[in-house]
Length: 257
Ligand SMILES: N[C@@H](CCC(=O)NCCCC(=O)O)C(=O)O
Image (cartoon, rainbow, N blue to C red):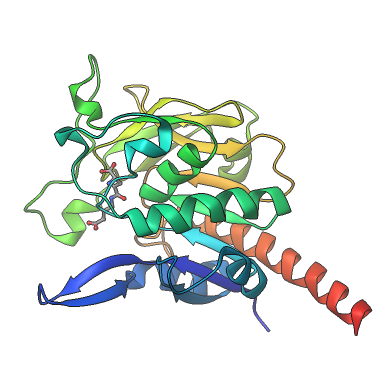
């Protein structure tokens, strides 16, 4: 059986009325067709699930993008208008789940908001609107564009020479899309920034001393993941890590029974 990847959902009001836990099919396609794992979306709502249950059920976790921002209280700052909207339920599931999974060596991959969650879970701070910082560019998506225009490749990302991302991609520079307003301001002590946009915005990170796969990217590799030469190695490596976790877990279960 394929490993099972838990994909965190976003809160969504269908027809502006009906509350849902939603997740884009780009994420499930990338997990199934590129990582080679079974994708299962789970609710980002601490009133209906426990962190320990998630750790038990899944072999790895995908922390997806999402429009609401991580609440600044999570990194010790006061809420302002610039911080925009929040999803406190997702904060309350994602942050402890990321910490617990990383400490156990259970694989995690963070994307966009998920990248920011991994950063904050390990002590980083965020800036609510990076384009307002001197020398920074606008990383937001074109608001009225088609999906293809929103997810078009927009800038290069340069990786640390010999770092995990350069090794994974087989290249020190790749082209990526970009669809975010916030960014890492101060990286936490174990957060190793491994990739940067031309304006020095952090784009790729890994967690120091993590016993398992713990990578995150600010761009959206789930878009066109089957074809994209940058997305493929990332999802394939994540899938391999989830397979290894499942195999090791199977051995433990067999020993017990
Ligand atoms: N809110 C954060 C994270 C941005 C992010 O995840 N964007 C994906 C949005 C996809 C969509 O729903 O259109 C930020 O703005 O930095």
